[in-house]
Image (cartoon, rainbow, N blue to C red; front, side, top):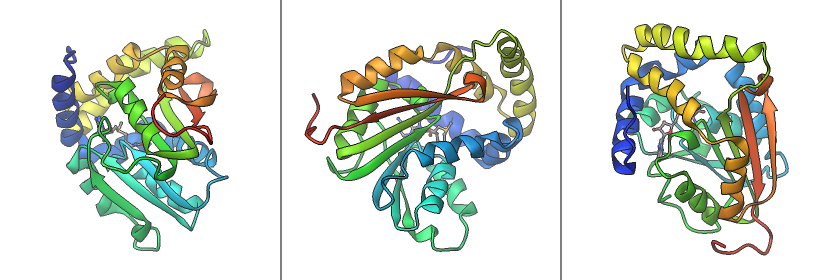
Amino acid sequence: MQTPQQPEEKKLFVKEKFSSISPHYDLLNSLLSLHIDRYWRWRTTRQLRHYPEGWVLDLCAGTLPLALELTRQAPARQVLAVDFCEDMLRAGLKTLPRDGRMGRIHPVCGDGEAIPVASSSCQGCTIAFGIRNLARAEQGLAEMYRILKPGGRLIILEFSRPTNPIIKPLYNFYLNKVLPVVAGRISGDKEAYQYLASSIAAFYEPETLLGLMQTAGFTKLCRITLSFGIVSMYIGDKDIGGMGAP
Ligand SMILES: C[S@@+](CC[C@H](N)C(=O)[O-])C[C@H]1O[C@@H](n2cnc3c(N)ncnc32)[C@H](O)[C@@H]1O
């Protein structure tokens, strides 16, 4: 399976794949990660503990699992949940708990490369398992920088490639052989999970992603690996004096 290389074609392909798996996305996420995905989103949200109020933009919000955690950890926080796949947002809306959090999650259908949000309007920005899917990651990062208030923080949560000599072959076998078959059976779209494996393999090296964040204007950059480096958090701040794009 070949992922389209042209940005507009990749966008259509990605949107179509997520639309197709949207009814099964949450179940498969939990099943295939053995529920560890909850811990990853908890850790990501903790990075915003010094920003308990105001707006956080959750980009590529999908079925809203990170938006939920963002509102759970901070009762005064509002979350703008942006995704370009309406079916993913709709699937997430169906599962929202009927409590106070529901009114603080605001789903918006929009493109991460042209975020429909005013400049310097959010305290925080998160993107979980989304940056790998953007057709133009640099453009997305410039947009995330633009919408953050000076002093605001970006946290990227994304799969990385473990280097531990014991974990690496096991993980690669699971990702390339087991996951597409199991997830393909349940979701009915094996290609979507082949795309997951190939997009992880093709994604930037951590240093390259940190370099792109720096080019977009972010400072105080750091990377924290989780679960043997299967995923990483990339954190960057918009300086107090940072107004527009650099
Ligand atoms: C793997 S899902 C992640 C969902 C959620 N953040 C999570 O933690 O499970 C990736 C999401 O990125 C969205 N996406 C990909 N490219 C996008 C773009 N250019 N603009 C907005 N959303 C995009 C997809 O529609 C999909 O819902």
